[in-house]
Amino acid sequence: MASPNMDEGLLDRFHAIEEKHWWWAGRRRLVGMLLAADHPQKMLDIGCGTGETLTYLHQLYPRAQLYGIDTSDAAVRYSKNRGHRHIYKASALKLPFPDKFFDAVLFLDVLEHIARDKQALLESKRVLKPGGKIIITGPALQFIWSRHDTRQGHVRRFTRRQIRALARSVGLDVVFISYFNFIFSPVIISVRLLSKLPFLAKLSDYDNGINFDIADYGLVNSLLTKLFVTEINQLKYLHYPWGISLGASLKKLR
Image (cartoon, rainbow, N blue to C red; front, side, top):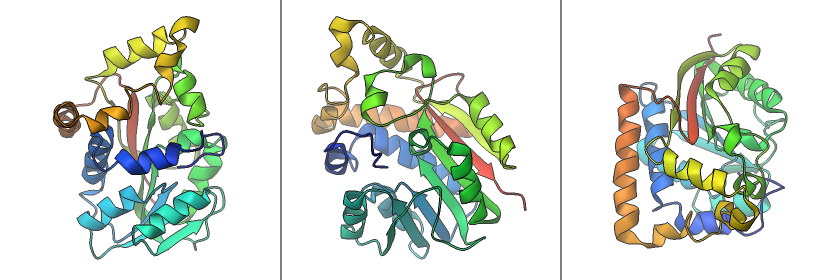
């Protein structure tokens, strides 16, 4: 999602690397797993960004009707340029769709950008069919908040307890919830905490030469992708006690 507080150019950077970067590969795998049992045929990606996720969903469900919204003109343009037709400039707080319209609604690293997160979930619940699911991914663990979050336009990082409480407050049932990005968390947590020291603050910048540039180093990126996707696959059998990110699936019962 392109947040109004996000540095200009970050969306362009995402577009350049997200198809091959190890982190996006793992998140795609998680989204596929969380949707697999339902075979949704009408889906909405809230904060669709460059449309990369919609392209992935089309590969999984070629007959599905895919919709995306974003508040950024650039994001809408990127998504349409990828060939996605149902892309609209709109807010998560006021969706331009009728009640009970979608089988699945996705907030993929989006809800942390929205100050009125409860209102956003209520609105997505409105457009969701009974039995439909809301898939959420987002950054976790508030204690590692850094300039990385500020410059990407975040307003929070999540815990499982917060997501459970949020789901309960809007009448959604928690089907799945777990931290992920567990394997690499010791290193990432250490880097984010060290970046709180003024002379190491650059470590937490998204353009520090570590976060995104690694996608251009084929062998290293490939290894990280294999490790991360393996970690995600294990979520079929276990839930991680902590991690840099959090994923959840919330169901509308009626």
